[in-house]
Image (cartoon, rainbow, N blue to C red; front, side, top):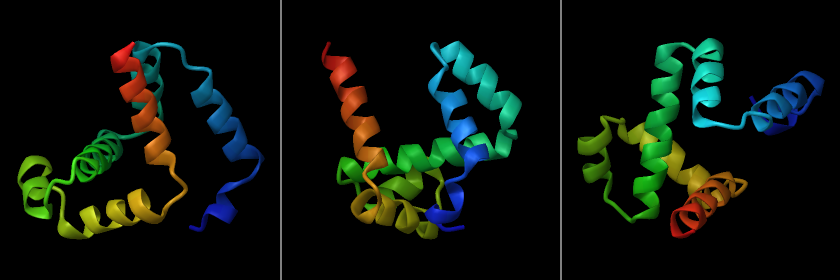
Length: 100
């Protein structure tokens, strides 16, 4: 699905719902209601892969640590390097919070 097709009223409503979450516990509750365990595990794995790619870890290290396939790592790598900078925004903010 292309990003263009994602932008609609229903998706805006979902994003607004996510943005109104205020605590980690609220996020856990919402996402466990919204997603299956497998979907959440996939999201967690992709986020961990992106973090390790930013640390310039090798594909082999990432496979060993996360269990992700090289196809998944490659897909995440494309998003990290050529995407819409979503990962960068989140990781930079997380790093900023750790320093505060």
